[in-house]
Structure formats: structure tokens, C-alpha cells
Image (cartoon, rainbow, N blue to C red):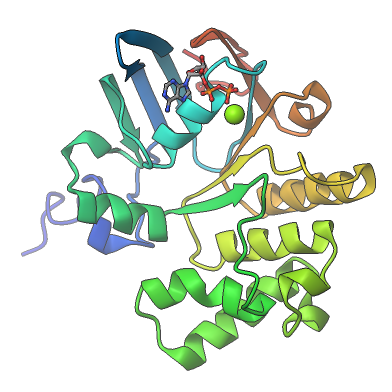
Length: 257
Ligand code: ADP
Ligand code: MG
């Protein structure tokens, strides 16, 4: 017999259910009083001092702050590359502090698409192979990898550059390959740290247009930047200074706290 309980799919998303989402919308990111203290010898640096924030599915949020304010520290935590000293981080409803190293690696590979300032492409691989990498790690077979890489490269306007190596592409094109690589696993979140930092102004503009387009198609994007002109491209800006959130603007209803 089918009871309402049987139909309840609002349980936290398990790692093995990549691509499956609960019927009730869970914020992509929930940070609750997150701190991060680095200890270097006798010196302690409080890089994050109690950060709380919520980012909903399909939001496009900029995290902006001056150099040394804790942006990269926060990005590492959001990307499951590092863990908080205290506080809670829930990604798609799941407390990451309860995950094993293996589970965290799975989350990084399948649920988050990373875009870095330095592109981080492998110079010896052509664009298609670079984009295929996360799928190769996830054990996707070759034919499907190829097909999905081509689709992702087409999405970023590089269908005619699939066989080019990074050194044969402009900076803007290399960053597009990086975005295709971030998209190819169909992640819950795209996390970009200063993605326009190494681009000329025209390529930077094009990159922001691409993010805007991805957002319109329903992607959740967190863009980290120290430039207000870049942050302006997002729907909402979270400002960070000295490891504290300054003002989380209540732009869209229900997302501020
Ligand atoms: P941002 O990306 O905004 O420039 P960071 O998150 O890189 O800021 O750094 C925040 C603070 O934490 C700075 O004072 C920085 O010196 C310190 N910090 C960052 N990473 C480390 C680390 N691995 N070890 C010690 N201190 C660090
Ligand atoms: Mg930084």
C-alpha cells in the first residue's frame, strides 16, 4: 500500500543520488556560524569569524571583499577543499562535516563545478580531453565522455576548438574550456574564484555574459571577487571583511538571514 510516508522524498540527498533532488527545495548552501582559524607556529589567524549565509538553488551570488578578507578561505570551505574550525556547512542539505574523505572527493567531483583564476587546464590535453577529466574520474565511459564534453564545449561557444590545446587558445577561450569542464558533470553548484582576474576586459565581459546565461538556464553560481564591477553581474552580493559578513542584502525574498 502506498502511504504519504512512502512518497516522502524530502530526505537529505545522499551522495550516491547525484542528480536527484528532494521535492522540497533545500538551499544549495547553508553556513551556520562558520569559523576558520589557521595556526602557523605560534601565530593564529582567524580568517573566518562566524559566517552565516544561505544560498538558494538557482541563485547567482557574488561574494565580494578586499584582499585578505577571507574569500579564498570561504571558497575552500564551500568547495569542500577544507573544513571549518567550528560551525556547520550544509551542501544541498547535507552536513559536510559528517562526510568521509572519499565522500568529500565525490562531492567535489560530482556536485561542484570549479572555475579558478588561473584556468587550471592541463596543457598537454586538448580542450575535449580537459573537459572530459571530471567524467573520467567519475568512471563515465569514453563514448559518453566525448559526447558530453562536446555538448559542454558547444554550450560555451567552443564547438570549433575541441582539438585545440590550451596553449593554442586565448585566455578567454581557455577560461571557457574551464567553464565547460565545470558544467560537464551537471553540478548543483558552480563555484568561481576570481574567474575574470586573468582576462582582458572584453574577455571578462564575455565571461560574465556566459555566467549570466548559465544562471538564466537555472544554474546556482557563486562568484568570488574583489571587484565591485564583477560582483554587479550577480543577483545578490554578500560582502565579507575581516572574516565577517557585512550585509547580506535581502534582495530575493526568503534568502536573507
Ligand atoms: P582573500 O582570498 O580574501 O584574499 P584569504 O582567505 O586568502 O583572503 O585569507 C584570509 C586571511 O587568512 C589572511 O589574513 C591570510 O593571510 C590568512 N590565511 C589564508 N590562508 C592561510 C593559510 N593556509 N595559513 C595561514 N594563514 C592563512
Ligand atoms: Mg583570494
